[in-house]
Amino acid sequence: MINRRRFGAALVAAALSALPLAAHAQAWPQKPIKWVNPFPAGGGTDAFARPLAAQLSKQLGQQVVIENLGGAGGTLGAGVASKAAPDGYTWFVGAVHHTIAVSLYNKLPYDLQTDFVPVTMLALVPNVVVVHPSVPVTSVAELIDYAKKNPGKLNFGSAGNGTSHHLAAELFKTSTGVQMTHIPYKGAGPMMQDLLAGQVDLAFDGMGTSAPQIKGQKLRPLAVTTTTRSPVLPDTPTLQEAGVAGYEVQTWYALWAIKGTPAPIVERMQAEVAKALQDPQLREIWANQSATLGGWSQAQFSDFVKSEIAKWSKVVKDSGAKIDN
Image 1 (tube, rainbow, N blue to C red):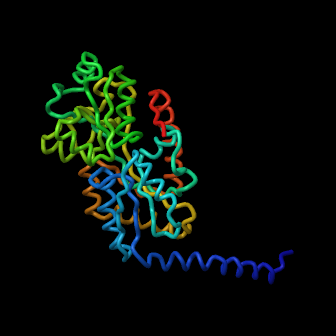
Image 2: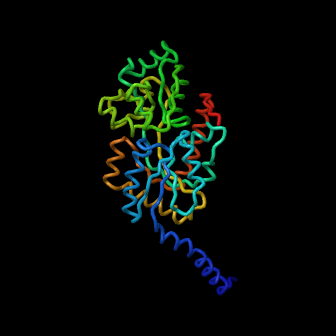
Image 3: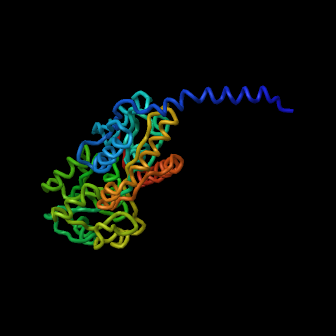
């Protein structure tokens, strides 16, 4: 028989023990919030993080500041963020690159699965194969033919070792048997500058940074890397349509909390991001970059991260790509 008095006391004790966390979440935020972006300004992460941060600043009543800490394919900034205080005022804006780094690097200054807590997806974006106008190809078939006739002559730029730009090209190389030289940069922004200047020949870039250059006819698109065409580039085929069987890659950007951040604060941030992504202006920005809206639940995003780590581990193994550090 249940002792009602004891049972009631237990309920009161449980409620009281939950009050500090609930009060903490209700009071948060009381000062500006920092999102660590592990890539230089002007890249794909910035294209989504900055307008989203502006909208969240309105919703939360405190400024959400983007701090760019580029270097080492996004792993340097991730390492810095992982050491931040878990008080709800520092967050990490990571990307697909960080699920690749798990198997690509021999040693990392952080552990993606134990130092961070998955919060939510921000955006999923197709990559697009773009070439400088000086490269004498207008299709994927011509690119493959030219690369085979000139092994090692073509070079491709990326946002850094271990980024999706890098591994997307490595997957293309193993799928087609071509040889190309990798030129890593400290972010998509610096890479794009050299691509536009003709210092590098091509890139498997994210749509966020390439779309404006394609529209301005400064770069030539050959194919998108997803299984369906992009509404932004309806006349550009997918790599599968262009003859590269089974090829599929997409870039995505997401938000993590520092391990130990109070759960109610993490839950609120997830809810605020999901709400912000319904703003008409943000939806238009995402649509203009052919991006799929995020706002996923924590559980959904956590499962996705695990699946991406497994997927890219196979690509790294099959390509033989490795970074000694």
